[in-house]
Length: 70
Image (cartoon, rainbow, N blue to C red; front, side, top):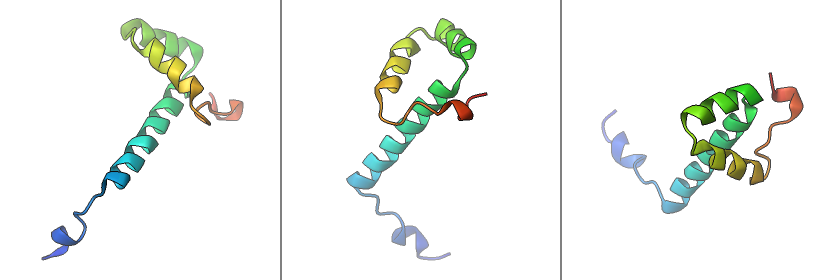
């Protein structure tokens, strides 16, 4: 629709930080939700992810509850 592009194009620094934080939490939760074997396989392919997994474990509420794991 004409004119809408200018209406919703104002993203603030705070909004960008909130998006970044939410994506980081989702990434951490996704890594931690993998099975031990899946994590080991991925870390074998990308060794730098070992540090990322350890950092994810330190984040508040990043560790999914056991009921959410497969």
